[in-house]
Amino acid sequence: MARLTEESKTRNEAAIRAAMDRILKGDLPPGGKADLKTLAALAGVTRTGFYPKTNRDGTARPGAYQHLAEEFERRLNELRDAGQIVDPRVAQIERLKVQNAELKERIVTRDEQIAQLTGFRTLAISRLAAQHDEIERLRRQVADSGVVRRLPDTASRITPFGSCS
Image (cartoon, rainbow, N blue to C red; front, top):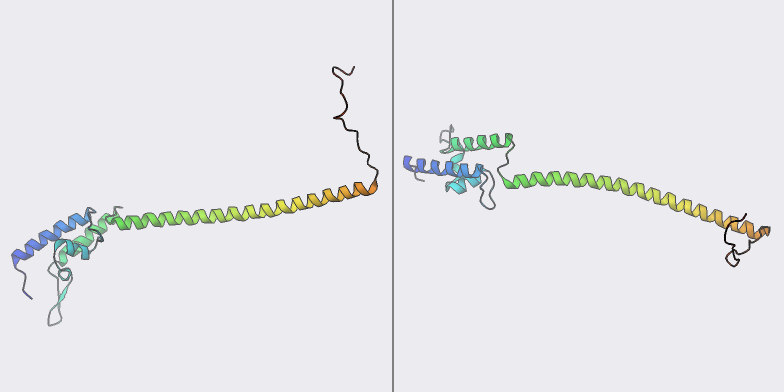
């Protein structure tokens, strides 16, 4: 693999910084996230330059653009700490989490209301049944005793007009 020339490295760093600014402003490509993979794709460089390398003798050396990856992560964390959400998908996920919590709370409240109303309905039906039984008992008692006289029908009588005195 060919080594990077200083001119290529400078051009790539400028492209990475431009892509970094674009991502941090929230201008993400479709399907992209605020991460190194999207940064590399927007800048047109490979991701391997963002990670440390290992020499043949086993010692580690920084990647060609590792300092830019660290700067990107630092700036992204600063924005998150400030309460700004760069990735609209993350904002949507947070909004959906809040909405989900509210809906769960509403379900619990509704379940409590349903339980109360079910108890009330059961109590009301049992009271109505008891009242019906009492009315039926009283009707049987009246019918069995035969002591009750029917009052004359007042609708057929003519009522006087005026005062009673």
